[in-house]
Every structure is written in C-alpha cells, then in structure tokens.
Length: 219
Image (tube, rainbow, N blue to C red; front, top):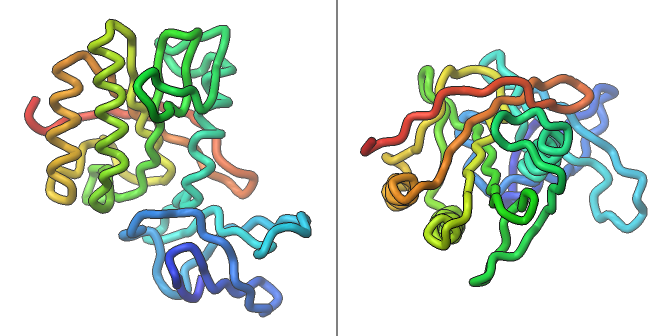
C-alpha cells in the first residue's frame, strides 16, 4: 500500500507492478494500521457497477495482519452467531440491522430480545487493544441506544471485534474519546454487557476464534 488518500481510497501496487486505486472501507484514523509500503491483502470484484474494482481487506504493520475493512466485522460476527460460536449468545433467530423502538438500528437482534452492537478494534498500544481510535459521536449514540434497551428490561451486548493480531486485552480508549468511555461505564453500570472477541486472519479472510479480557476505566 503506497498511500491512503481522501479517507476511503488507497494507492496499491499489485505483485506484477501494476498500480491501482482501491476502496478502503474504514472511517477511523487507522493509527498504526498502515504505513507507506506496507503489505496488503486485496480483493477484486467483477461487478461492473462498482467504481473501483479493488478493495483493501488487510494490512501488515509491525509483523501483524490487521483487518482494515471494517465492513467485514459484522459479517464475521453474524456467521459466528448463527453457528453458535459466541458464548452466552446462542440464538435460533439472528436478525441483522434490527430497528430500535426509539429509532436507530442495532447490528443484530437475537430471538427478538437481545440487542448486539459490533465495533471493530484495530488500535494497539503496548499489550492493550483500544476502541475507538478517534472521537466518535456515532459510537456514543449507539451506546445510548443500548442503554435504553437495558432500561426497558431488555438485554444488550456490545461486542468488540478485534480484527488484528497482537495485544492481550481490550479496553476503552478514554484518552482518545473520554465521552465514549464515560458513556460506556454508565451503560455497563445500567446492565450493558461487553464481550471482546478476536478473529484469526489469513489470505481467505477472518474467523472468530477466541474471547479476550475486557477492562473498562472507572470500574
């Protein structure tokens, strides 16, 4: 990967030397997730309606592969939910993009009673994996929707999907987005559950494989 520009575009050199512009589905800062000349795994679409045929899926920085296409996280988690591979979240019905009663949507609704919101974690500092990597009003709003569900007597789960190698535990990046971290602590006190899971990455994609410990500031 030669460069990232205009947020959603990446200049990539293919193995044969051809240079292409690839789509980069990531709204974050991607701190520590790319550097000029880093190795990438890309995917090519044959859909003639797409403006860009190529998409960046993974980057390799510091000896670690990182899933930078954040749109993949929901598909990975959805597959694991349907296969019953996420502890405590067994369900007969897994409904994606389910609307909350008060507006907004959750990534998943399980059996009509458990709301699940997925966030993709890529920032690594030392042994800790952190979310978010930039201030995110949208992520804070999602926490409010999950807390409202809990206060209605429903179950709500924030699932932090670790889409990268490296790191041993997951935490809120309070030094980056203190509002999100404070909102998370309040939601957890109200009954929001948090799980962190890592996917194993290879050239074919990613698969959810292990649960990681989560620590929250203020608790």
